[in-house]
Length: 310
Ligand code: NAP
Image (cartoon, rainbow, N blue to C red):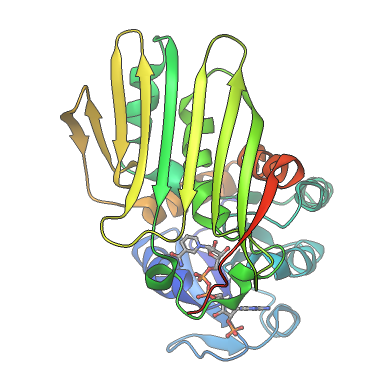
């Protein structure tokens, strides 16, 4: 697919679509924002539809779609888009189960279209620098601390508390997407403790312990009850010093000293990558972060904690 700009429809016009996807699409000359699909929201300056099927029949010229709906409804919409021969970008997490995303991947391949399962945190400013720095080092210890205030970051989002919404893994999977990208050695989940509010179907906190092939220590502490300073930190200790990815992967310190920092351009980078995939007729689907989360739900010990009230 080489003709640009690609006419693109955005499905699910909520927080992330309004704040990141649409501005990044509008900044990228390879795309032309052509339609919004939303049950409640109208986007100025483009055609608006309430269901993807309506967009598909009314605007056959739109051949690319970006799905920004919650994960629980993504599969059906993605399937409809692929069936109509559209190229599809999926927000993270790409689905509510590993196998449904594998089905989408197979279907995209059969249809000869691009499927891009995005991990926006992998496009944070310092992630590639950290990956390159770590490439020839021996990693001994990794600590992920991902603690934020759910009331501040996810007000009114009921889907995060419903099965498939993933609870604290909604942000936690971002940390895992970075780690699985920057670490070249395999690791797997060994233990997990998940804390479920008594009135919710998904956890508000999770402590994970992973094992590697050698004497690697790797833990993750995800918590949505954090007030005060917020933490999106990954500390990677090597035999030659420590990398600290801070601020969600946008800042990098070595042995506590600032090494690299840049403005967050995650979504501009995602759309640049999407254009590259479309031009070369390729897909990009890495399920490893989702597999670790699925393992946590499969293996984790569950405790019930205080009900969550917004
Ligand atoms: P959101 O603000 O709740 O928006 C989701 C939109 O999807 C809603 O506005 C809704 O629009 C539409 N939708 C369709 N079916 C829905 C359903 N059954 N339940 C709820 N909404 C439905 O969510 P968001 O924060 O944009 O997150 C969307 C996806 O982006 C999630 O997978 C999330 O993990 C990911 N993400 C979010 C952020 C962030 O900071 N917010 C960052 C990165 C990634 P209509 O009601 O108008 O149809």
